[in-house]
Image (cartoon, rainbow over all chains, first blue to last red; front, top):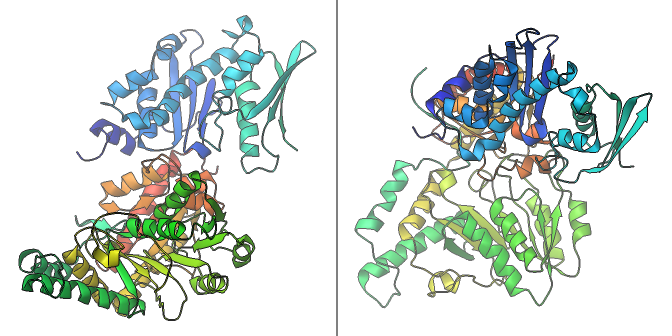
Length: 215
Length: 387
């Protein structure tokens, strides 16, 4: 075997399982961005009584390790309760796949975090964890760590692309204003705006998310 | 499908031609001495004649028979010698050089290394077809400018530059001009008797010649200092025992490139571009439609990532390269695609196909057929695909 990938990675890459998008999903997450070269979208259905994942689908724009990891984690998560599924880690995925190249860790981690984020998205929408954790600046920051800075491929918090986060209370709900260090006509402005809104707008106590660009 | 590999990464390197090896072999087994002076022993004199003959053949091809040609270990060394050697020789005259932002790594990183030591470097923009703006070049020239280095053609997108006009601009201002002709030499004409270019980087392994041999053409009286210390070989410009078998192989490789071959390569390349753009939706040609090297096709397949495409191609016995970050060792997206104003998605989804004499037209049909299926499959799983 001359390639860096294991036979199982290549098999999942060639024939990925659970590909697609569930309509009207209970939980959804998009991790990564076209700019960083890897992106995973994951949707799932959860049985309200048993809390088991009854259906799960993913789509990937990325390299072989990204596609194979998306395939294996959806296979592992299907039929598990959301608590069990939360324990599926990069290590679990890597072991199942017979090893992933270290240099490709970033690409495959994205697929794993898309599963966790989709579960969190489900929990937040259904108020399972949400009431205990109102949307504070720290929460906003932690969510924005999942948004990539398209100029560097690293997240927008770490790369100081976010200039300011403002949270205002309006009728018991919150309006969040995120200021970004990019001009509004930048090629990635729309992408970023959408991604930021997607990470925050669904939260129970959020009324609106406003993304501001540099003038 | 037959099991023969379809190799379309000929701008990375090529398969050696047997006739080249045949020309080289005596210089390993019979005439294996170093090149000696005419007053030394016979074997060394014969070696020297072999080396000189190779040099003359290459100079003739460049149109500069009476000028200087220094053999090096390849294009990387040639461009290092040109950039660093001229900057060193002219350091009292000025502190500024001009290159384009899509130069290949030997020029780009030589400039960056000198920049860290205090040299001022202008990186010229290119338009979306990869062409520099001659007006911007003229405006960038200052009293400090000592060197301009603009490639003859690009390594990834194949776009050629108007080096005649660039050379004349440089010549008028008495600025030394270097061009990296690695991807054009023997494929497109370059004649130093007609173009006032001072230094030309050329390489052997991209034209079915041996690896580890290249050359730098140096016009007489060009200010340049050697950057490697040692013996007095190669007019005291490049120390080290001469690679005579390599030089002889290089000259033979040049001799073997014919107009018919270049026409055949161009024809296959044109067919590949036409078929892909026609048969696979959401594809774009990168680079200039006509001002490009005959062997190069570079195409972006939108909504999919290049490493996944090349891996699928490899499973089907086809070798090509991509500008995707995942494919590269540095994990950086192609500076060339970003340089022509492309976004990361355009770089990640770009594929380069480069031809040589060992390709055949039927391979083009196979590649298009296989690609159509791969792209379809990858788009099914892509979240970026249009709904």
